[in-house]
Length: 178
Image (cartoon, rainbow, N blue to C red; front, side, top):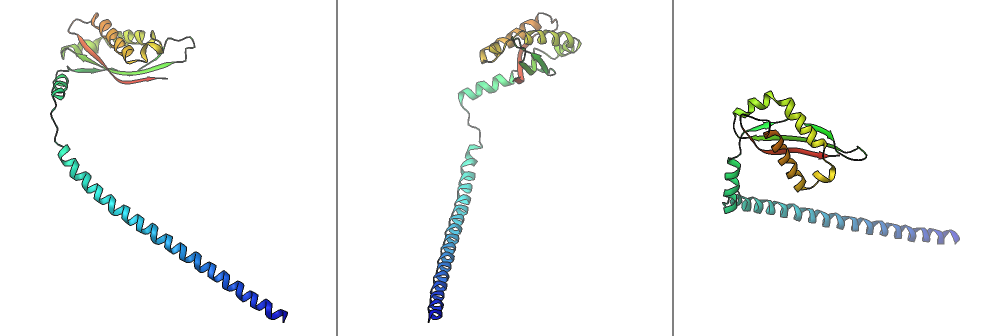
């Protein structure tokens, strides 16, 4: 009789474990269906928003003329010829001597004829700019106002040594302090 009760208990335990496994399988299947439905809705919704984005971007492709935009375009069209300079890497003026400045710049010329003079005076131009850059501290060049002042100083120093024209502006194309 003891054997009969253990067999009945094993059958009941097996039924409980089978029903537990069945419940787990059903829950997993329901989760898979819910996740699949959510992904499908998101995919369908993504296509609709993509189509709406294309529809709304079509009117924006036409440039809208604003009064200030006309001024900017005319200012850009009045920029003179550019003279690119090689990269400058200098030590900044500091007590520790561990700050470096890497600058690339273009000079805006008043006319094409000035380009020939600049080609002949490249060493002088580089020397002037290197001396100016290395005389600056991090505090002097870290602000927008400081960069503008540096541009003005470069223009003034270079224009004092030119005969065939003037440098109108300096444009930094790279400005990295480390």
